[in-house]
Image 1 (cartoon, rainbow, N blue to C red):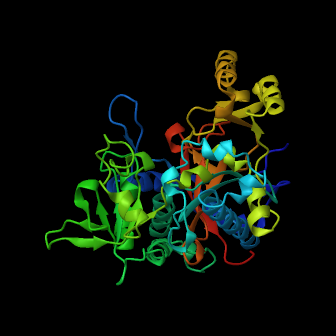
Image 2 (cartoon, rainbow, N blue to C red):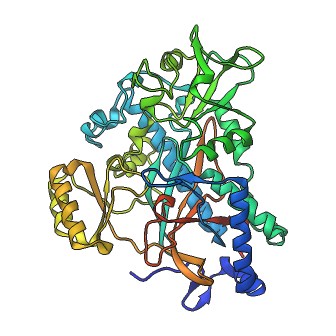
Length: 471
């Protein structure tokens, strides 16, 4: 498969990139490089960092920001938008089903063990109906592209997909440094995300809420790797950023301690894993959770977004069955296909994977952040054999996919414009309505030849332009 260059095809500039090409010609490499350093200084001044744990020294890092935007044509976005919303509907229908009648399991469309034996499945949620039957309120769908019309879903994120603050800050920096680029209105705005998120959370207020819903963002605290994003989103929404010590449960409601006295909390946008939410329900040693929170939630006194137990829908083994969900619940054909995936839990797939490790990308079913994976073509013989032993020891913990030639976009590196692999994570909001900000977080693999775009693995980010009309 030939590498698809998103800017140039068959030696000619693709229409969506015509404006970017003209801008690059006008600005020149020297000024572009200077502005890149200015952008880095702005990010550092604002404090947009993330943490990488397990390393010596200061773990706080800036995510490298590439000034050359990634451009998506209006017609391309129309198709992506429809496919993402379709997927969000199906995933939420699946979550409702597996915690109620389990019809898709009884129909044999998905193996029961993948749900009932899944670490993310919470028996406490069986029979509970969250407001609007929405379990995953923020769905991050990771997309890759391999050709002009070939988009694939790489994975789904139904719990607390991160990175949206970078989507918003990338645009803010670009508009501050190059305001002329946005004067013609051709690039669709992304600054409505925070208001849409607030509106979405208010729409799923619990039955006990009888006034304007009070929304908070629950963070583990400033030492969390995504703390900047937690505080950014709270500020952008006009919501309070709270830690567990700020909240308590009384008479089935959640209350926030303030200098004015206790104030009721209706909706909690949590950025804490299920296990740590409530020491009375889950891990008793959790200092990050609120005692009694699950009781208040299950009795209709508060809404938790996304719902506890929503992670069963974004397991990498469950991912392989999302096309089945779309057919089963919606009666539709998938608009966006999955990447071909081999389930190591299946004997035939396992045999194929072990015979072709050199050509595959193998992932842990519960893995994230680019950790714990094998990229066969870029691994040493010793790494391949060590991973083979892991798969053979516990095949159900792994899935494998072909090594895709991800599309590449122009990127500034070492004073030159080069092609680097990219992916895209749009953020779909699910309340009474489904809302999708036009764009998303484009991640770029800055190392030459690398396919790993995660920031924790050396990746960077770009502003994502969705055009308002065909250029």
